[in-house]
Image (cartoon, rainbow, N blue to C red):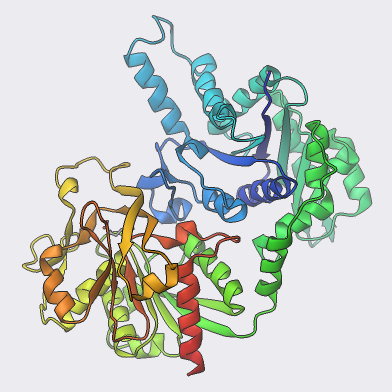
Length: 537
Ligand code: GLN
């Protein structure tokens, strides 16, 4: 019998209801009561991981220390809980099938017909329990992607139905997240879609224990009673999730609604220890009472979709609160940025961040943005492709290598200042083959980064194929673009700075993935501080 407790979160009526935020908020409250909690996301799509997805499809691809390319919800889990996630925290249908098919090829099913039930469902159940079996957690929250009733989520729903019985009574719990729409013509909140969605879930053998109702208006007592009656849940298990001004308010809103308490009761766990949310509330207090503002330009090519740069946006929220300033992130499309309009578009910014990215589209605009930041002494942070653009800009405009480029954009350039990494040269498969996950980097004494991190060596997460070409290092350093972070094992340049500029830092890795509420990332904190200083001058 299991000692770990499992909470399954499903969604109904509509997508984008914020299952990830509800899961993370509940986890935060349970953690604040002293429980060791992990969150996991099951994604019903057939890609083996989201690494091959365009950001326009599902937003940013998040990266863990162990090099998993995952759904962006894992970013919320880390930002809320301050506990690192790993490969085991995100599973897709593609990965499940891949693993079952590999087992079939090895003959592991001993001549049996391989079927959705039991083979796929067994694989899903195993994946769900990996974290629980580690012994590191008291409670696992598993978020099932998609919406109940979708064909592709059926195997997951069936798996958790089976698991409920295998785990034993009081060891698991179902939370169903739904939408209560407001019909303005009728002036009423409507419960019917929720009734239907709860019914759909019951057709698959699952009775929701708790309903979390997304709504734009307060749920009245009558409406809560009606939902309880029609959906077969206890009255206090109808939880209102009203639109919040920031996602970081949701844990407190759930606390007021008693979500954590009722979950603990149903799991037969102690609920007498009050949640300790001191650090969290201190962050909220700073977030909501800024003493100033800074305006940062985010130069990218996926700016139309908010979620494409999720972790960067969130890292700015953490860093703003830490500096007690509100960070106004202005998204600027690099594709439409050129020397004729750059002054107009970038004027009034206190800092410029050039975003990560892939492929040729929009890169000349990024180079122009770097140039603007460099020439105007504007604080600059380049992340991954943004760092590579800084090297290209410096090579072109200071070293005079007019055709300097990355071989990603121009395979034939005679000045490949950014080039494919040696170990990448013979790789042809796209999925999961970049330089991924946490790598060590030694910091140069006296540099901005050494001062910011207050460390000689750091570990940061990567996701790229191209690198700074060391053949140009001497020239670049002599001309004033200094390498201040080096991987000690490979000699790869991970950070560049211009010591004569007030604050100019390009990093090959992604600091945004490691910023959390409890630990705002030092680079973002330093960048926002530099931008604020620039503004005041
Ligand atoms: N496209 C670049 C590379 O592969 C940068 C990747 C990134 O910004 N994440 O090296």
